[in-house]
Length: 155
Figure 1 (cartoon, rainbow, N blue to C red):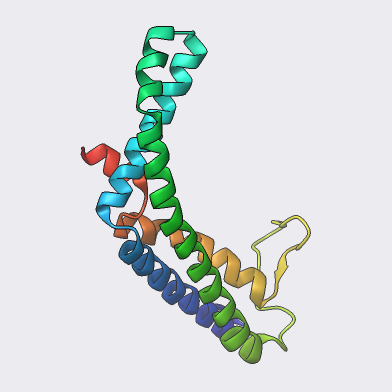
Figure 2: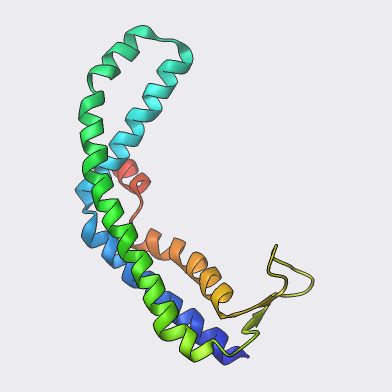
């Protein structure tokens, strides 16, 4: 049981690396900085609305069109990335994992009495693949600096 578990983990590492590199290619550091700037603007706008600060609200509303354009521009690239990453996920799932591991009922078991809702403690190849993708994607994205927050901290 350890071999399929390890193989699926390694496949998910490759998929995470490919999607992180793809995101880095589609969304440039400038796009990420724009996203961070837009997020900061939205936080400031919400804060001014919460406080009822009309002077600050008026000042921020003048900049709103600029940030809408940024959101639309970067949003298009995010949609392209999203579609591409879903395609990669399904290509690997249907083209690699299903033929190799589709016949296995259990690929991994959770330790002790740990249970996942709707799954239990016995994981099939799809559940293990998804868990591995989530687990490895966060550190890889951090390594490749593909989140807008990292760009706002550098500015």
